[in-house]
Picture 1: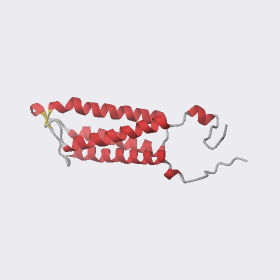
Picture 2 (picture 1 turned 135 degrees about the vertical axis):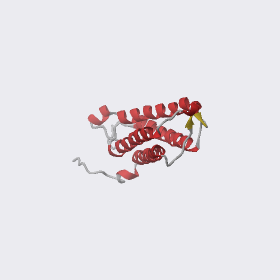
Picture 3 (picture 1 turned 90 degrees about the vertical axis):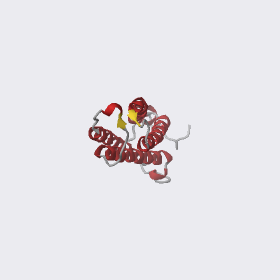
Picture 4 (picture 1 turned 180 degrees about the vertical axis):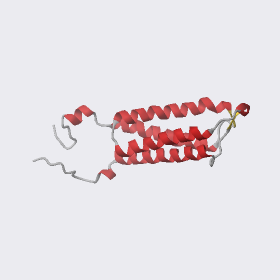
Length: 148
């Protein structure tokens, strides 16, 4: 007789679940820093040439994107979302290094700290996406408890 009861340790002790929570926390941390940058609490480099750049829109958009990403990590377990999140991280990290030479100073503590957290988030997303059970196997009813 099969039941739907979970046998063993609760879900929150599973390594993948802990990685999801840690990744969501990293995303929320990034969101807070981006929002602080947007409202001017956290000071970052200035644009070269004296260009007047409003960081409010940048901070709000980036902060909102990371809050959305955290919510998706907390509430959904989907490989496609993790892959899209990983691509977003690669884009955000790359853009920082593309834009940095146009600012004075090119690299500052907030930006470098954000990139370190984003690299950690990228590693977590790649781990989650690469270790996810295939949907086809889950549809067939494959279970690690089942013996061949």
